[in-house]
Length: 448
Picture (tube, rainbow, N blue to C red):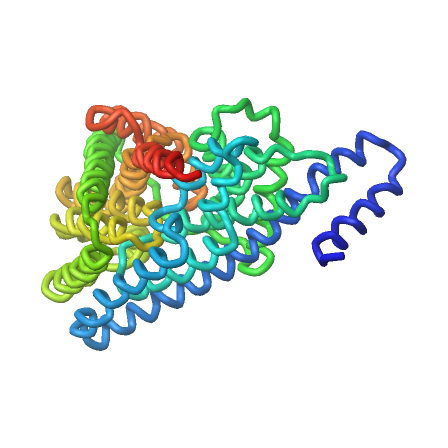
């Protein structure tokens, strides 16, 4: 008997001692979610640790000598792409579109295709490729990858459930995995739940609310047990706001929403252009040249173009240095475009937040606002740009709210989400994730 079979066997033996049959069935249906949630939390902590070390090493290298970037960045981009191309092509990019596609494919007829999108190999390749990217200076985040990793963990646990066990919906398992992954990555349980409802499923939440809520809580607690309670960003000062601050907030929201939608359109256009490449050499050269461009921008203009951008968000929100060069948001968008289309693994969540933060900071400088008012524009820009990319206004607002624990400005954040969503709709009616999901589904349709 395999180890996994022994585990489920003894769990079933213990549950069988309970007198109430309904309780026994409920426990049997919940325990696989709980096991997957604990594993997700542990992997998220390990991945966060490695990602942070990679960013710290990149920062150390850039401080020593920027010239090293001309070697590290193009080679790192190329290797990160090759690892994905050779061992797990569907580990490229964010991971959220892959999870969305998996949910649609989780039916008896097409369930076998989900293995291409969610598997143990995907987990390993996703982590290695994204770490290479961030170490090389790629403008990527770990949140999207964590969501795909969590989906793979939940699917694998679902596959391990014995035939004698009560059946659990494949779709619900994968959706819950995505929510738990986001909660563990950002330490935002409400954000994970809202993300599942708003982005991942059209199913009424009542069908799996217990599993969803408990999985999000357990994944978050597992991460907190090691990292301790923390906020992704912290507690920015938001006192003495101007009575007319809603006008600058509206401006930031519209600009950020349009920016997020434009970046999404550019990503799709570049990916469509790349799809014409017939030889793998051309794809490798795309990643290599992209790395050279990133190195040149960092060397000749500013190294702030590199990395996930979390340091920029914390600098803007928690120091007196609110100055943002007018070109930084554009450079961050360009860096994200190059990194996301290189073909390696890496998310766009954190870069989108950092781009929005620089937009808010730049407009705060332009309007000569106080530090507190500028902080609000920074948060509004984060919500706005993320909404422009994802078209998930509630998720974006709740995420930023939970990252900073500033409930006093929730209406401003919701206002920003609403305006940015409407602005982005002008550019494209659908989100970047939806377009990429449909692309993966079309590719998988051609496979047996």
